[in-house]
Image 1 (cartoon, rainbow, N blue to C red):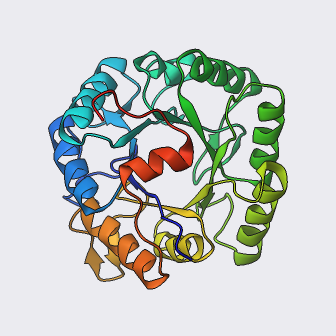
Image 2: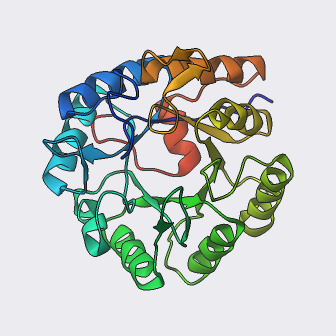
Image 3: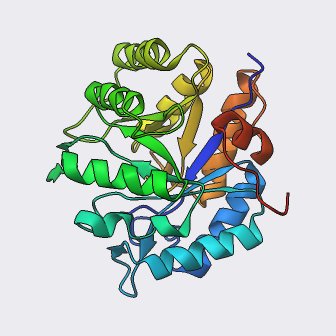
Length: 280
């Protein structure tokens, strides 16, 4: 394979703390520095959460605005993807940053179990978030924690709730949700290609020690890869990851081994059908 591989870096998330790994970037300044290093290592999508003054997850649009502005200044061309995840807020507060018009935003289209609670994505909220993304020209990344979420994304696409062909990310390894199962993974790929076309781009994310497993599977199967300290704070059983960039470099080495170049930001935008920055 010679198709470029997009590397997404999930820089912070809602759960990891500096007690888990001192390299986890919490403040806006730390996130900017960590993301710039990851961008220079080959990441072309930054999946972003923000924290409040106490380090707790929040959906505060002002904090998202500051992060987005800094990323666009220091990482020109980087695809900024803001999270509408449920750990950072409730109800429509989860989409309060969408008027900022980031390139992308995460969209979970169904509910599932998480380690200690239910990750609730009720249909009316999913519909509202999708409409907000349409209104503000934000491309959703469908976070599929279950096969039904891929089918729901197809239904929404056919109904016009998602404008462009959906970009689906398989999330595997969350405790109490879908484990990292190779046969299920292969069926996910089959389903995406059946519903959205043989050339439909897709991505995969593995949680904890499954991160490197899913990087291998996705890159080897022609998909795109997500890495970063949100999903996994370790390089291996014995070593903490020193940075987001270290995890990006690891994914880049896997791509090299499979004969796939790491996508530039221009290639990533072309693959995903995203607008080019005005200064490009």
